[in-house]
Image 1 (cartoon, rainbow, N blue to C red):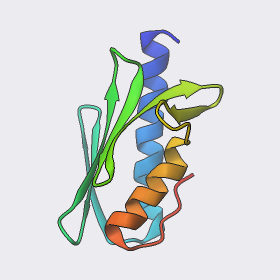
Image 2: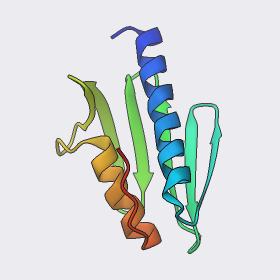
Image 3: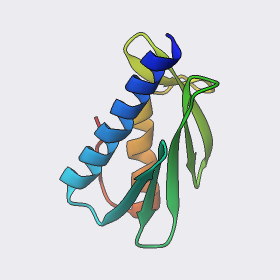
Length: 104
């Protein structure tokens, strides 16, 4: 995947996450700027999701740790444990917010 393809896939993914959070009705604030999406929860904790162009990955910083996802096949896959981005992000949001939010 070249840089342009990566940027489009990653940008589309961040937009999809924003839309899913918004449609969930959960009490989660979010802000997007410069390829970084910050989710902020009522308890003050945050999840930061950002594009890493040089590595062609999406990185997630959550209370439970830092995770790197590369695009494999048709999904963003965690290079440490093999989990899929949206599934793992749903779990991170649930852990930090206490709200059951399913991202797809």
